[in-house]
Image 1 (cartoon, helix red, strand yellow):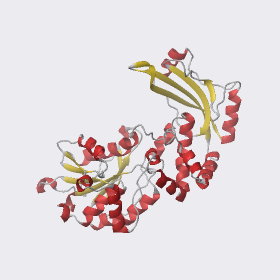
Image 2: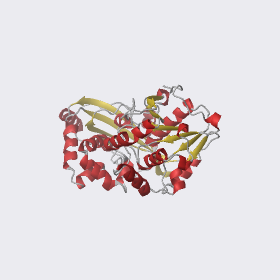
Image 3: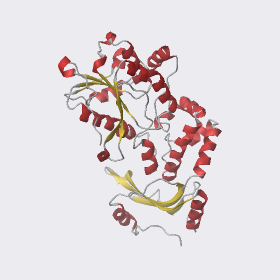
Image 4: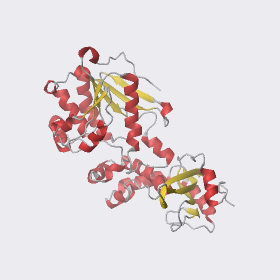
Length: 399
């Protein structure tokens, strides 16, 4: 775990009677518009730039166009004014891995594309993609990282924490107010100014002459809603980045058909509908030419705590059985199929779950897809599996 050096100088807020002005910069339209506005006219807002620290949590997989614009237009403004600019990322998959400082300078010149452990790394290892039902990805790769930096470096000093929620995001701002403490004062200046997202975009267009792109991972599950048309255009313009997102989604959907990136629709389906043959063909070529594995997948569905007729939590066990080329993996799976049912996506069902049966219930299948998903099983999974199915939880073997 890396702590930031203090010799760059924290603002002497205690002596001046002012809190540290800490700005979370996500590179997107809103937080960038705030930065540009106050860096251009600090006196208008009663802000002493000597009190400011700008911090950016590096998730990895940001669109290259967003990074390029931020480097070209915003970093020079920060460097010219000597604003302390910090880039920080997760040190690994576990909290014990801490955070890593990628850059801490008053003259920033580049934005880091990734840290030691990214959301893409986590998605590959787990065989999942971010889900619409929660913002766990943001909490793990942004919120937790920023909290660690603040704890290690501000060390109890009072600070005003600026987050770029626009005037349309009052509910998110209200939730953020819950996290106020004796030292942290949440601040949402764009809401105070009445700046909508459109107003933020107009401010950046006036300053730089460009339409600022949305900040997001290329495989962001929240980009399939109102921003879908813009996302599809970016993917037409950047088929390479679209293919990377598709390569993350493909194994996730094989492990769980309900894990489509956009909920009811997969990214692949959307790109096919959009006629993005360049990205789709690039994805299929790369998928076919990377290592593949055959996996033994078991899943237990428990009953909901308040209603035994409803599904509650689900546990999943994943174990790789074979790794080779794509044709070799498919041949291995075909040899394992025998008289077991095979679904339209190629999963070999060893134990289909009975949709009409009550809970708990269990299912088991084999699949072949891109390698990379790590073996994973809860400590008590085997015991629960045997209790529910009456079967020993041994690995499947080809006869």
